[in-house]
Length: 405
Image 1 (tube, one colour):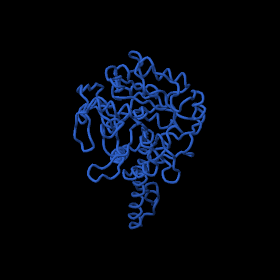
Image 2 (cartoon, rainbow, N blue to C red; image 1 turned 60 degrees about the vertical axis):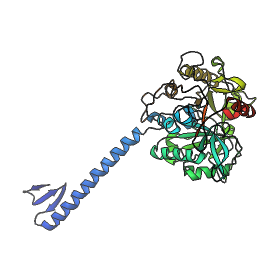
Image 3 (cartoon, one colour; image 1 turned 60 degrees about the horizontal axis):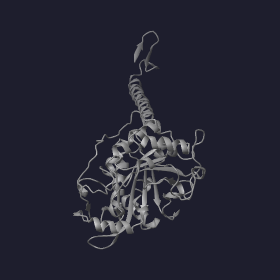
Image 4 (cartoon, rainbow, N blue to C red; image 1 turned 135 degrees about the vertical axis):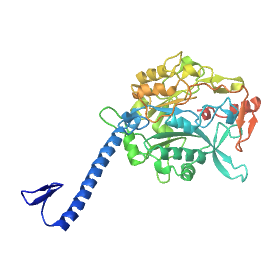
């Protein structure tokens, strides 16, 4: 505010008011001052909103927000909840050293698990549990509890898109699975495609047929759930998608690191061209097993540093991804590994996604945790028990091999 003696007017924030109107001048001054403050706050709000929007990171990178769901590679933690750590007596059948939430914190965006029908140890009521092949030997608790932990993580990380793959070992129907999602209050995050029975054509440089990560975040539909097998249910659970309606996989039961391939294994009797033309997304299994007695296979921990590396030794993850990228003519949409932290596998996926400076990602050790030589399992009540090689062999031989995937 300043006074213009020659004109007989006072200039207040650019407005001329006649001298001698003191009350009006005071009221106007206050109003104009408040208006200017509001305008400044509004400009600051717009400025910071623009800055934050520009810096929003989707799946740990601002550069991925504009990429469609099918144009990036999602790192997957195979058999995510089945741990090889102190809680399971360092089970030889454990597929990961760190729990599912740590996997998410460290950059994994696909979590796979196996779901089985079990019974409550006290009430004997029917429950859905996370069990490795059979619940009697490796039970990591209720599906709803696992989903609840993932929901809490998604609540705390609002710009992240997560994918789940449920191996539906006992053929549980969509309505019962939906009940588990409801208990965890996670269903509202579920992504529902335009057609729940088939994928759209694959995105390309000129046409994005899947939503971008940013669009999924903005809409709040940022959890993609594939189930194998599943009869889709449009009315009750449209966000639960039958896996092989949308995906295809290469072989998973590899015991020789020189034998990693890219040709379709599931669905069976298909070619790469057929899968690509169908719109299905490629899930590249990069899992190496160690053959034991009685036909038992366990994750091969002996060479996992090489298996999960960019190009160290035969069967390296980076080499496999490059080979499959050339054969399929696009990078894999998903890569599934054991012991995700070793390699580290995330470094190879970052190269394909052109992520150089990940945002908000937790660092975890790249170390291998050998554990004990014995097989110890964790039963449903949380008690550790020494497993029997012979009993395990009988059960494993009787189980269908696809349950291990």
